[in-house]
Image (cartoon, rainbow, N blue to C red; front, side, top):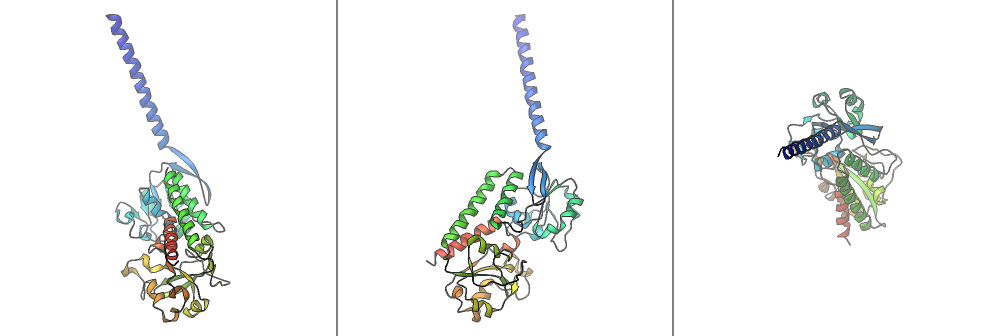
Length: 328
């Protein structure tokens, strides 16, 4: 009887020690994960990023949609530069850093970030952010000059997937992008000449192949034949001045158009603003342009000016394919 009781006590002790060991191991693993970091390569070299990050600040427009899709919580962000459709714009807990024209960078201190995803319009503030948050990794993944633009969009997505342990989700975004490019290439008739345009405040600007911001890269990705090429061109969002006569003389078979004003609410648009379709398709001077006569105009998504991420291009390329497939 006593022997059985002693055996029971001994067994209970072993079980207790085993449970205590398991509990301690789980605690140690959780602690190690909370205090761990991973090495990430960005535009500035190797960065040590908290894994997982506990306070994230985001300023790069190209990343906002991806972060929202993955449910990443933001402590501070350039909310003023976000398209209205993003849920972040309705989250009052996010500290708004304002726009790049009048940023409120001091709010970064309040956010106490361990990760800042910086870039695009806020790229100029890299050093300021690093000083305000010395304990944070400042990650910059803007498409790099001289590199293939599509590959750079995918690099950005892959890297963010590593940071947030969303590798599979990142691959899905990339697969969707690749499929859209394939569709668009197949739909394009190589005999058609193309021109990129940007409309703003009722004016039309020319976006040069390759170099023109947002619109320009489409020419390289899809192998479009330019209807017009100039020796010097702008790389900003406004494009270069061009007359409707010059557009008509170039006789493009296809127009690729970004409506800059469409990203803003009507009361935030510049005076004289009008939808791109109205500006182009109602123009008497352009009525005989093949692209307009044949309804071969492909417009970028309305939020493009405030987005420009990989999803924007995926949506555009699918729209491009839809438009040209229906012409056949």
